[in-house]
Amino acid sequence: MIAHAPTRRPAWSSATAPVVVYGTSWCAASQMVRRHLQRLGVPYRDVDLESDPVAASQVAWLTGGYASHPTVSIAGSVLVEPSIAELDRALVRAGIVRGGWW
Image (cartoon, rainbow, N blue to C red; front, side, top):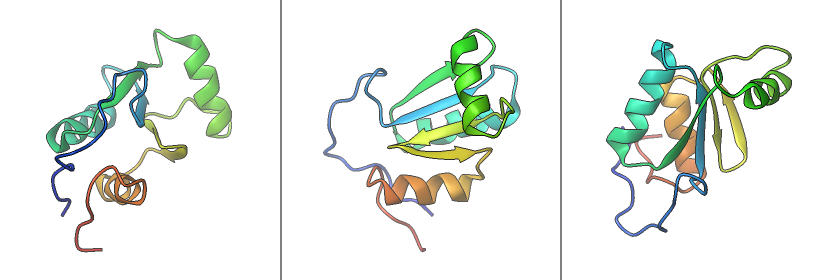
């Protein structure tokens, strides 16, 4: 279980958010990741791979040739199709949220 996001955190804009979600509007896993970040109060930048071919190419390069979605960048670490538990652990490691039971 993740604790809520810290009460004192830097003011992030979508351009400087520490989390970037690369996905599509119709992908259930992408929607799940975005909803989870919203529930935690974590600011993120959402990049639609269907409307941004440059981002789709970058994701394909990062993931070994496939535009896998969601692909999530957290403070420089890249997660490909992460589970919620993997996402939470990466958020804790990056110091974006406080740790849970692990």
